[in-house]
Image (cartoon, rainbow over all chains, first blue to last red):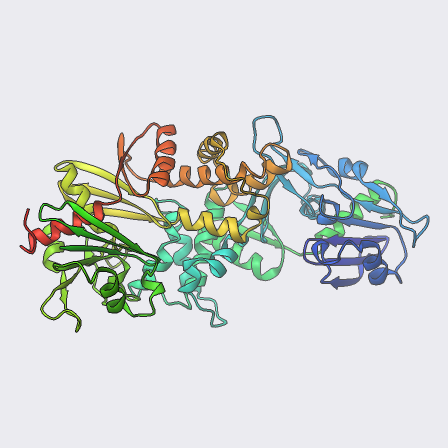
Length: 295
Length: 295
C-alpha cells in the first residue's frame, strides 16, 4: 500500500510493506497550496511506479484541497476513522482505491469554540497503537502546534496553539524583528531566560515587549533575541496547557521536538520524542482495519 | 511657548498661552522616522511664525531621534522631569531654547525586565496635575499601549502591551488575516464575544486560532472576525493587569478610548476618557516648573 501525508506546503509518500514497514519514502514540495489543483497528475507523477491502494491524510482532504471531508468529532478511535474514510478513483488508475482520511474536530457544540486538525490525527492513530491503554498527552509542534489527549487509544480533546506562526510574523513583520539578527546560532541561555520569563505576570502581549527593552538596556543581544522570543512563546504554550502530566509525547521533526523537549524539561516535564513516520504507521493501521492491508 | 509632541510617525505642535490654553494646533506627517534627520528644518517650517521657547517630547528624544536623552527611572514626579530637561539651540533660532523631555523607564534593576515610554510621560504629567493626590491607573491605548500608575502625582510602575501591533501584524500577515474582511463596520456582538473568550483557559496563542475555527463552523463571519480579534486582544490586555481599580483613566484618541472603555465596562471597570491634548498640558507644566512659562 501507499501512504501519503499531503499538507499545505509539502507532501510525503511512503511505500509500505504488508507488515507496515516503510520500504521507500518520497518527498515533494507541491503541497495542497502549490499544485494548482492538479492533484491526480502530481500523484501519478510521484508514485506512478508503485503499486497498491493509496491512503491520503492532511490538508488534501480540506475545503481548499482535493476532496473535502467533514471532520470526525472527538472522541474517536482508529476504527471510527477507518469507517469514515472516503474512497475515490481517478481516470488514470481505474479500479484502484484512493482513500481519504477525515480530520478531527473538538468543542463543536453550540456554545463552544471548536478546534480542528487535518493530518495530525493520522500521526496520533499511529502513536495510539504504540502507546496502548492509558491516558497520554501528545504534542505535535509546528506552525500550528497540536496538543492532544489519547485515552485508551481514542483521540480525545485537543488544542491548537499558533506559536510557530506567531514567532514567524513577529520576526518578519513587527518591531521585534527589527531588533533581532540571525547569526546561524541558537543562544541556549537566552532561550532558558525566555521560558523563565513566560512565568511572570503581565500577559504575553506585554512580555513580548521585553525583547525590545532588554536590548535597549544591553541585557539581550540582537543575535540572542530570537532564542529568547522562542523560549517566551514555547513557555507560554506549555504553561497554558491544562492538567499537564509528568511525560509528554513529542511527534515531529527532531530539531523542533528537541526545542520543545528542552522547554518541557525546564518546567519539570519529560518529553519523549517519536519519529515523523507515525503518519505512515497510522495510515497502515487504518488500511488494516478496512482489510485493505495485511499485518 | 510652543509644545511639540513628536512621535515616530507624526508630529503635533501647540501654541500655548501663558495660562496653558491651546491657542493653535498644527499637525504634520513627518514623524521621527519620516523626516530624514532634517529635524530643525521641519520645525522651522512648521512653527517658524510662532514665538516662545519650544518644549519637545516623544521619540524625538530617542536613540533614533534628534538628541538621545537617557530615561528617567520611575518613580518620578513632574519636578524631576523639569530638572532633567535638556536645552538645545539651533542655528536658525539663536538664543531661543529647545527643551527636550526625557522618557521614563521602570524595572531597570539588575534582574528585572525593564520597560520604557517616550512621549506618554508628558501626557501623564498633564493627567497627574488634573487628578491630584491618590493612586490612579491610566491607560494610553495605541500601537504599544501603556498602563501607568500615578501615586500622589508621581509617575510610578508601568507596563507596555503590544496589543495594537499584534492586531496589525495578525491581520496583515497571518492565516487569521486571510479569513477576515473589512466591510467598514464594527461588529459589537463579536467584540463582546472576543472579550468574553479571553477569560477562558488555553492562552492567547491558542485562543487566536478560534478566529479561524469559528469561521470554519459558520459561527463567525469574515466581516465580524476583526472585531472578535480586537475583543480577544483587548480582553487579554485588561485581564492581565495587576490590581485593577474600579476606575481607569483613558488617554488617547476618542475612537480607541471608546473601544477600551467598552471592554473595561464588560469586565466591570469604569473607563474615564481624557482628551489627547494632555501632552500640551504636561509640557506647559514642565515649562512652569523651570520658570519658562507663566501660569
